[in-house]
Image 1 (cartoon, rainbow over the protein chains, first blue to last red):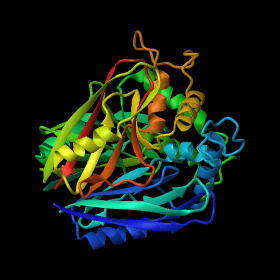
Image 2 (cartoon, each protein chain N blue to C red; image 1 turned 180 degrees about the horizontal axis):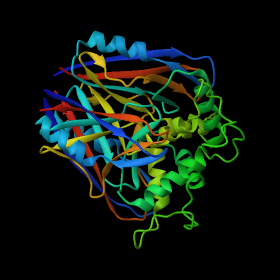
Image 3 (cartoon, one colour; image 1 turned 180 degrees about the vertical axis):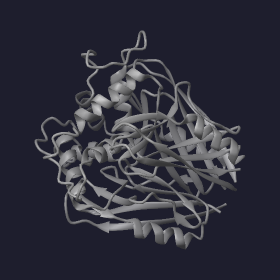
Image 4 (cartoon, chains in turn blue, green, orange; image 1 turned 90 degrees about the vertical axis):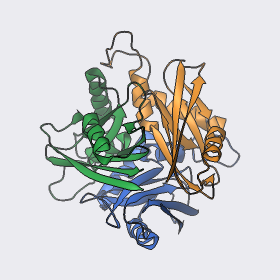
Length: 139
Length: 139
Length: 139
């Protein structure tokens, strides 16, 4: 069995932002040399998500609006999350709806995807340096 | 390490529908010959889910009603998802609540499940030909 | 390829409760002897979750309140889930928001985590004996 690990790093500019990371994951699969296996892609932060969706701006706006409705950033007053200086309780809730990770099959050395599947990093907290882990195992 | 890949295909009749696919996944595990490993089962479409639940019709009706409350299909007007001819923004949101995939342990050549666990395909968009990917790795 | 399987068992005291199980999963990884691989941790019940979050009590209270808002336990009347003696439809819905499972990379014989990542078992149904499955594959 082979294994491969790499990290992606981002400097984000907005409080809430979705970034298509498919090409980075494809490059990791190629670099790994793994032909048949599983690829885990996960956010290394607890206020962000990795998820699979369509790359369509209107749809991302719908996600953003819907998540803000399910877990508003303001007012903060309903939230108890009280670590000094924290105002991101809503980001923890949004991340749970969108998920921490995806596991993708690798077949014939490629991500084994349906027609519209693309991998996104979703940030729900303020702009900061953020990381994504890619771990691949297989043969 | 061994690996095995297969697809399930469905012709669905309703806009929103849950199908128990456990027997299909069990058959794939048996066909794979893998005794100890991991089994990934994922929707290949971005308006549908694979999830694990109890096979109880009342519960599925509760999921359906609850998801329709969280992300209504009508009216479409709050949604920005504007690809010509698309009216399924709600289906993308519902799929995110229910998840894209499950990863199940394989132990002694069988799905390693708790008492009530069953695997379902959940469709949230209109009736069309749909696919599910099963990828198994192990020994 | 090596594989390792173990179960955790809990006797829970509250209807809704979050338990940090990170140390148990770390012990399983060490016992497995696996240095590079993937670790699946999943609830074996359909009214509970395994998820990754920060170990901060205020945040857990926020999750609890938010989930109760999204899927109230009372009144039961909107739910159809009618298996005799069941009153836990809400728990099935909450579990779907929080997820059934996590898959974590193992690197250098350790859980490959970001700074704040911790693994939790989340219970949404009444107090009962509950189980979590840990399955690890790798080399």
